[in-house]
Picture 1 (cartoon, rainbow, N blue to C red):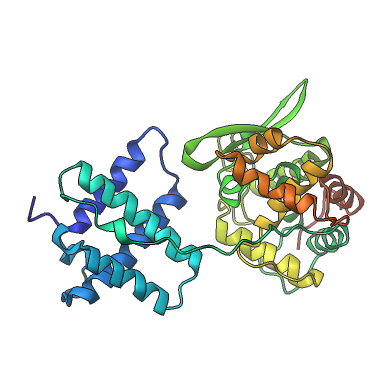
Picture 2: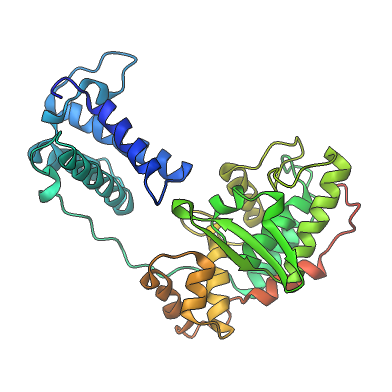
Length: 336
């Protein structure tokens, strides 16, 4: 065991997490890999370990390098580098999970993370859009713009409708397949794949389905037929949309609409707006928790504080759907 590198043990740990009952999404795995890489570099710096060119820092380290002193020094280095409290908290959480596994598998005799303190995260209420801001964003996304790269109006409107109609995470929108828009006599459901591989069905207003249908009809004309298992959202080149592409498009909507861009993930503001709207329309916390896919009701309950702040102009789901309907372009819209 003494000869095994931390890189190899990190790989085994991620394999273990991927094979566990809860599973692990691609985004979560990428975040874990980035966190372990950051720890590896900080630990190598602390111990003065030379990392040959072409190697990852963890490939030059062994379990013996995971000491209380080294981890404390590395955590302090993250702070000096100006990493946010959220980033440092996530990295510490990753290291704790890894070290707990290393103890269980006999690669460590004691957990060296016991002295690590999790940074206190600032308590910020979610930001939701007002009806007026939503209207400006919908109009901006529905208006051709010569300088917009790869603009496809019907795709943009489908994105807004999905975010506003069901409150999904960006990663969940990226993972949608054509058959995930489920239609039956009781209405339309959006089948989402959440964190840890958990699935949930969220009812979506028929008005929000119209932009999706318009986009699919235009996609068939432009790019040809598609299968039920194909990605729901693709670009004009036929490439499946990615998180980065969505963030770029949302950023362009905000810029052209003249609406102040929220901090953090841009598209997430639509999820916040949806959540506040559900509560202000009389939905229960348990219903909202199921719709958002939160494992802990405490995570959902923060939206009650927003809804109770007296912010009467916070948008409900209905206004954005009205804006979508009012700005609906002809189905034959060229998109550019």
